[in-house]
Image 1: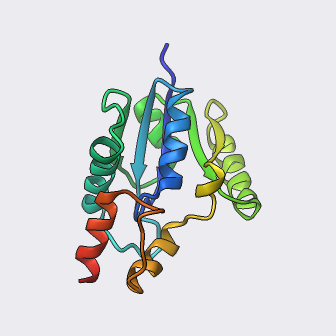
Image 2: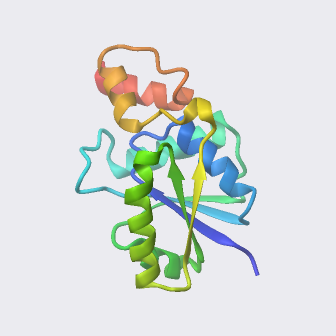
Length: 164
């Protein structure tokens, strides 16, 4: 039986920190579904279709990860329902700092209450990518900063098209 995991997030835009988590997840699951969603709490720069295209270009063209092991989708609703739809038993969540842990811990607990058969695993990006957040990427881009240490070439191109 293959291990299928869902990595949910807004990915607005995807960062090298997200990519670190994806690479680590691929070492422990057979299939990883990267699922982008619109969050009511976040002001997204890119719409869902744009984010899906950026995810595909970043992961498959820039980083050259296997399209056989990664599926990129959009969703709305509960992550546990998405897990049932795709027969995933694992939710992957990335942690950057201790400040992320409390929220992520509560979220994992709620998901476990909603479906006791789904486990949440927490993966940390490498130390050089811990500080990267999509919010900071957008702020740096607005101020014409250098994004090369934080995101892929495809993300830089997409962001520049938004701010030019």
